[in-house]
Length: 549
Image 1 (cartoon, rainbow, N blue to C red):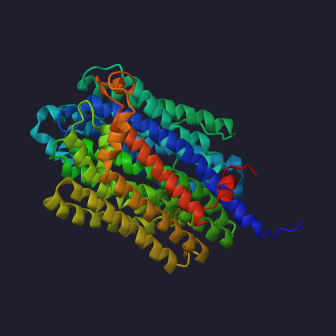
Image 2: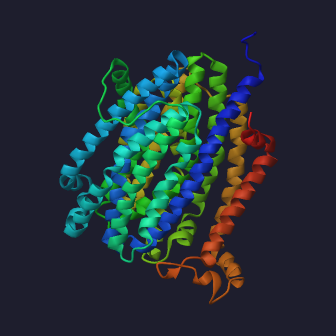
Image 3: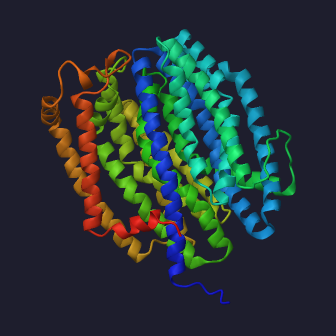
């Protein structure tokens, strides 16, 4: 029997990559919408600039999540998945599972120890990380308490990230993509019965821990159902393979968390501005939607596929896989960037302005969204290009690029902060992301690892054309927003029905909310029609993504 691959094989493999990405994206989309529902309730209950509990709660959520992305997701996306995939191919599943068990035990030990240190040092850490809160002792006090409550979320997420790597390397993506939905559902269940900002923040923090335990338990069950012999342990195993894994993980963690480090710099400098922590948290939710929906989803499916291709020395498949991932990611990232840049206040005001979240809060978040918007393609590209290095077990290259991007972020962000305030920090984050992405593209080409192919470049230009037309539509919709809302209000009842649907005692759905939905859907349908009309993306390709082999 011939081992020569047919010409159609790379295309079939790439459709497998995109199908796995579609699974990730679909569940991520559900999770993000659940996250928006959670944030709507939080914004209405907590507000932003008018309540100290809003900034305290947002900090308590940001702190463990920052380290989760550095220690857990960043490290094991870059180091564990290629090693585990190679071990399955080389040594078999039993030996690979032994390595996975030892790696998880070591990771849990490290994160639990780190968590305990942070718990004891939290009062002093907050004075370093959030110096602006020191002017309000009550705000600082509850920030410390809420963060101490949420900090154990870190070890839970370390387990989740590790088990997700096990599932993804075995070709199982659905459960790991869907598990974040639990966090949003549990948090909502804890917050909705509360009646004051204090109890909303307190129960939301408690809900984070409950969700973390449930997420870890669900993925442990899922990994065992696939036949992976991985059990929970806290006794570290520093074997030769694990030491090598840790050496790979240290620079990989920094490289994969470059975006989060840059956001953290923004949080540090904005702590002196009342409400800014909550503004950044809400803006983060908007631009993280395309990052999670596209960048993380495709990057998660790309890494094991690319690792197998490189391990098998299948260079044609590796090239085709990268081309597909690059174009497919821009198909989703560019329209998201267009929407955030062309109608930022329209989006924020239509979705969030209610309850304790005031008009001025929406204005400030809108300024942030514009600055984050032009960085969205770079945020996504970073997630797509990192696997090209990680699959070759090169974690030091991306680490160096990440360090450069952090320096750029600090220089641009702090400088612009003096001129335009908090939006200047978002500008620094976007500028840093573009520097990071362009450095990776340059060095991938220089090392002859990957240069975008001619066909992929042509399709990318067509995608950019479709996005440009969508930008004109969004700008026009934003300009004529009062007219659109006026037309919508004609069809709404004035006293009953939608006008009475409320969150925290305030109207939740009315003309401005429906106008945002209608404009957003119209923009999406226009963009999709343009993709098909220009043949940048074909209906047959969409069918191929969802068809089983």
